[in-house]
Amino acid sequence: MSDSAPLDPLSPPAKPPASRARIALLKRLADVVCLPSSRVNAFERSVTADLLVEMLREAEVEERARVARRLANLTEIPATLVRLLLRDVFEVSGPLLENCAWLSDSDLLDCIRNTGLEHRKVIAARRGVSEVISEALAERMEPAVIDVLLRNDLARLPADAVETLVAATRETPRIIPALLKRAELRPSHAYILFWWADEIARRTILQRFAVSREVLQEAAGDVFPLAAAEGWTDPLSRKALQFIERRQRNRAAVDKSPYDSLEGAVAAAETGMTREIAEEISYLSGLKPMTGAKIFTDAGGEPLAILCKATGLPKSALRALWRGLRRPETEDDGTVAAPLARVLVTYDMIAVDRAQTVLRYWNWSLSSALTPTLLKAIRDGDNEGLDEYSLPQRAAMLALSNDFGR
Image (tube, rainbow, N blue to C red):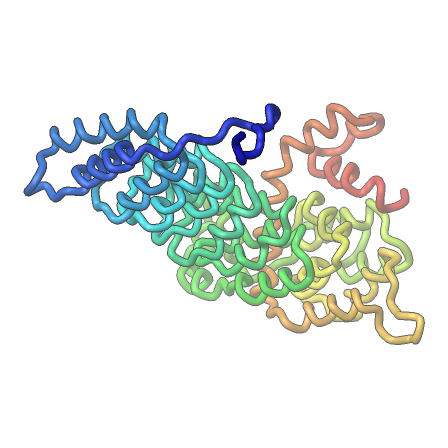
């Protein structure tokens, strides 16, 4: 009678021992692939790689991983072999992705498209990630991968990838701090990101990206008289000069306004902001109503400080707008409310010229980027009584309709 325990009919069959011949052959084939070109020519290496690929397709994970580790330090790996290994489970492809510096962008793109999150995280952490790879990683909008990519100082981000990442911050705000540290981020990106950033990120944006236009003003100083002599008839130069000029307020709007000045409109707003007053403040400030609507409805309030500083309004005007928007001015203990205190600090920290730069970028981006959305809102919404207004006026009314009384 045997002393061995009876076999359990429900247990899986025992795994056969690894074939010593297979292990040895895989090692020998990998060794041949690794030989220098002085020992093996390209055709011989290719034939060996083809044979190795066929064996690896049926090999165990441990065996495939052993071959990948063996090849990781090569400067040239046959394409069929590297594609097979990079598409494998992370246990197999990981050593190549982490240690092989000579993988081509084509190989990495194939891996990005055909593998999983762990593969893409390691690719994002590689030294010298190219613009092509960065863009492919950014397009997938995976927060874990984006976070690694942004923290990789040696990764290069093209403009399209930066724009994709800026859009991603709206749904994934935790990547904002890392994105703000990137050298590829431009003021135009930061000023849009500002609208959904928290107070810390907003302060960083204003400190780093609120640039002066002094160089532009000096360079184009003699162009203003030329444009004026032509009656400002050229729309391209007029738009650019409007961005460069020092004056923010729209003097021509005063003649059409029911208020004698911007200060007068702000004083009227103090007793209660309406859509009509908000529109007048926008025009008098040299803004389109859509930009003004965005500023007045912003939850944080910092754009109000930018508006006041850029147009030369004092702190008292900022407080008046705050009061007109029905926002709390004091805490229960009588101290200045924290949001208002933060906005007042923003007013103090930014110079007039830099505030104007931010305000004018907002005016450009909001008046162009939101046009398709605006048209859809007007088409799908309640159009009654809107026909008499211009497109920017209707934009302001739609934007403000839920926030201000008539």
